Image (cartoon, rainbow, N blue to C red):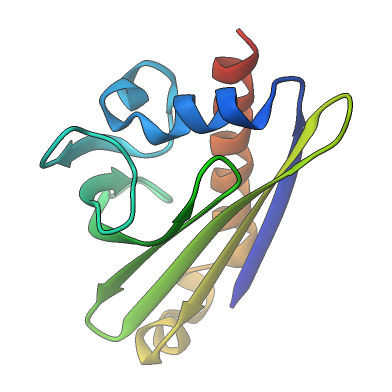
Length: 142
C-alpha cells in the first residue's frame, strides 16, 4: 500500500527542515506522532532512531523508526519494522520562488498488512498524514 499527500508551505525549505528535524519540539506542534523519545541530541539525521506513538483508530500503536536517508533541507526518509510489516516514510521539499511543496510518501509492505485488510485502510493513514503536514505547515509558517 502506498499513501501520498502533499501541502504547500509559505516558508523556506531550511525553516521547514529546522522545525521538522527538531524531535524535542514535536510535542508542541505535532498532533499525530506523540510520545516521542530518542537518544542523542534530538535531531533527525542519518542513523537517528526515535520511538513514537500514533493513534489511527483508538488504540495507540508505538513504533521505532530509523532515519535511513537525510539530505537537509529537502529530503528525509525513515523506516520502521514490526512483525509482518515494513513501512518506509519519505518527505521531500520542492522549493519554488514563492513556497515549498512538501510531499509525503508512505509505503507499507508485508503479510500483516494483507491480513489486516479493512482494519488498516489507506484513507485513514492518508488523513493522519494530512494532519501531520498541516501541523508542520502551521509550525513552519508561524
